Length: 167
Image (cartoon, rainbow, N blue to C red; front, side, top):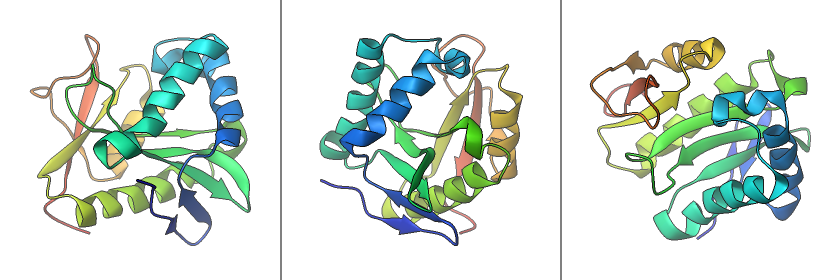
């Protein structure tokens, strides 16, 4: 299976390609990876990235590569490694695109695709409690913090996105 191509006013969201791994490896080698379990070696970053890409073939959903004017800007979509309690909706934007509304625009488009494609009542975003910007984005997207839903690590903030309501 391949990902559909989603388009917004500024963005193209597409299936990940091999060249995208370099951006993923750089992210996981940086301090920003602290929100994702800490810095990883290139080999460990490959294992995470390859697993995320494989979700498209194995589960029928996954993360989209986000481009703006042909440049890699980040990832947005559904992550579901084996140790997660279920499908999780997440986002990552590279430092040069941060603060420009890219994550919000891409996440809105991604959530609209999830609503149209799956008959799920909700999807969660599992966020490190120290990642205030991601928590704020999850709430801005209309999600609500739900402490009754499981995260991955102790203390995770779990934001529930209702998929039955608004578009």
